[in-house]
Amino acid sequence: MLLFYIYIFIQLYLQEINSSGTDFDYKDTCKWAKEFPMCGEKFQSPINIKIPNLESLGELPPLKWNGYENAPTTMTLVNSGHSITLTGQWDDNNIPYITDGPLTDAYIFEQLHFHWGPNDSVGSEHKMNGNSFPLEMHMVHFKKEYETFSNAVKYSDGLTVVGLFFDISPMGSEALTAILGGVSAVSSSKDPFELDPFELSSFNVAIAAVQFATYAGSLTTPPCSQSVIWILPINTLNVSSKQMKKFRNIELNHGDTHNYRPTQPLNGRSIHIFTQWSKLYMCDVYRSTTET
Ligand SMILES: [Zn+2]
Image 1 (cartoon, rainbow, N blue to C red):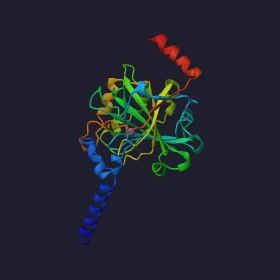
Image 2: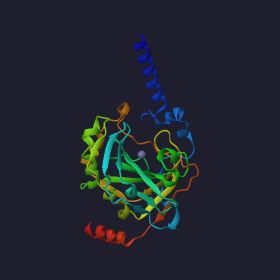
Image 3: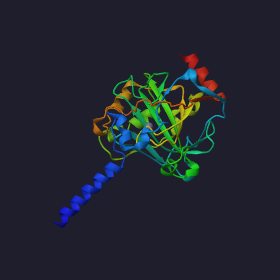
Image 4: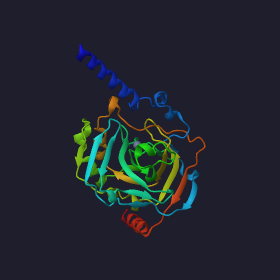
């Protein structure tokens, strides 16, 4: 009899975890607000970014990517059921963080994850002039002053997420290859997989981007906290169709075949654009225009 009560208690406890946790699916994202009220608030993400209508912040000090060239001591990939999430462990002085650009403080790297769709024509959460991309990567950072991600999420300037668009190119991405090397291990398993550590600068964001859109928004998954300064490079990175197939093999919760939330109303928010110039970038432009 005692065992029976223990069994019932555990079942109730598990139900409680599920209902108070973040269990959701992508079949009808409008329903999120019923269970997670912040998803129904005014300043939600993602949004459609209309480039000709952006207000310019002019030329800002370039975003500084500090410590992104430091490989972590361990790197872990996990299937959360809503995406695959990459985390790393760095020695105290080596944790990557970004500063400058539109940011007033240091924002420390927490994790990165991806959003994709059932085919190459959709998948990104943000749109650019109404266009979708097959893949969007979110590099999530929290404000140093707030000490932890879970504390920072309570503040309107608590997080900054750099959202990177990937477009189809036969070459694909080397940094994605490093991640997708471990993806079969997590496709249908929730067990974490240890990747060979690599430095996050492999994504070449720091040198590849010159124009960024920025606006105040939210997490794009429940609880949809409105705590995110979004930074979105206007240019795209490369992903191959073969790499996209590997993303689509990942089993998501509830049989979801995509993990992007539709764009949300702006509700009067301004989207700003800022430009950063560097010699490094000028060389890069020169190379890419002469090679193609
Ligand atoms: Zn995301």
